[in-house]
Length: 70
Image (cartoon, rainbow, N blue to C red):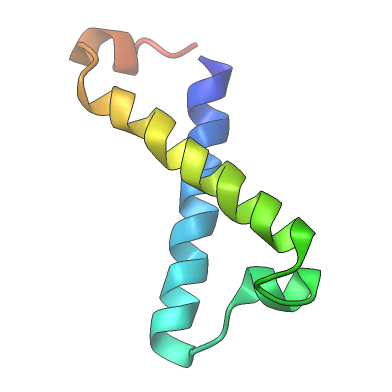
């Protein structure tokens, strides 16, 4: 399902951003969009968070459904 792949890509982006915060104290999203409080940054954080919630559903799907991606 295409939505699963999009969600997974967004979760990976979020993980890389958190990794850069943890290792280098550098927030890539805030840097690109002008700060953590900027509306664009908050939208990106929200979309990545929603993608993470969507990916929780991957844990509860039958294995056959996940591996039969076209």
